Length: 257
Figure 1 (cartoon, one colour):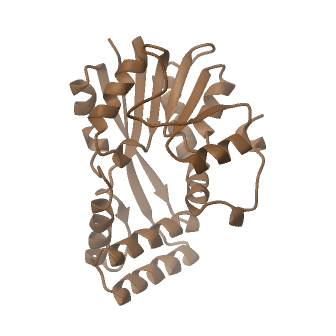
Figure 2 (spheres, helix red, strand yellow):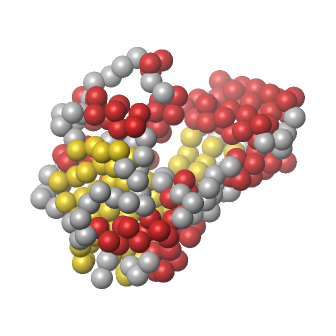
């Protein structure tokens, strides 16, 4: 069964985060970025792979369709339950990036997509990645830099305040820009870094924009009127086809010696 054939449920029945992730993951740019990780990981039939922070398992499904013996691990029970509902044939497990339930050297590919910014200790997670990878195994990390969101707005000062306030709520908002040094410190070799930019110009990401403004208000960075006016402006831009959100995404890869 391909991803396009996954069973669907009405959007209103899905968790809002799952709906947002589904919309973002369905974009051509996101699909191309996932495909690039498979290339960097040397994904091939028969190799064992793990996707840490797999969400509902889209990448696990895509790697499995390439013949990989793929396992998906996520800390969210709801994400794993939804993934199992969509694809009962996938190996999806609830687990912790710090303590993967895998033997030493048991996988040839380790992938983590938009995960490390949520971790208090990315170095510890990379130590676990090093443990489960076999010698010569490869790792690929994707993540956004939370302080580098670019949003077109008539009020750039308020926009900067919103972006910074939201970044301050993330455990490691700058983890992605640190990928190279984190991998080197963990003992990985042949480290490379690429940067892609996700561009959104329609209403797809409007819930996310509203959410970061509400987060800034909740943190006391804005008052209610400022947040509401900013959200209304972004909604009007989306309706008129004038919204612009750009998110730099860092893609790092390396090899375990």
